[in-house]
Length: 133
Image 1: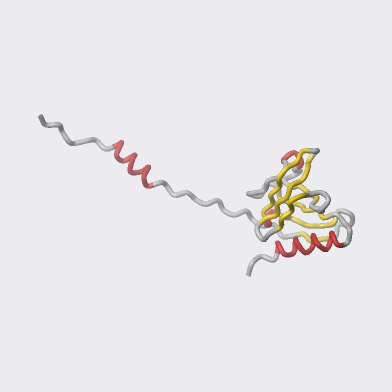
Image 2: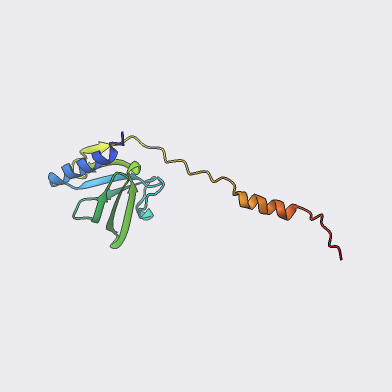
């Protein structure tokens, strides 16, 4: 089965909004793929206001949350992989849900390029042929 994390985040966000409160996301800002303003990151985390009045172009799918918001008056595009979300909660009363941390995915290992090895072998090989006139 797929992860329930994106479904829970969307449901809690809707519940908080329906109750007239302000939804905040706590995000692991050093998780791969996170695009947030680094000036606002503290201890590797950032708290983002995702209330409808604070963001535009809000999309929360099963892989990431993306939106535009202003930070210090400067508009920015924000991207948060679902597994980087640490918690979703209401600013006014703290009600919401925290999530277990997820280890970042392993970066793909890059095997040596066969063409490079062949080129290096050719460069190191001594030519045994002689020009005959």
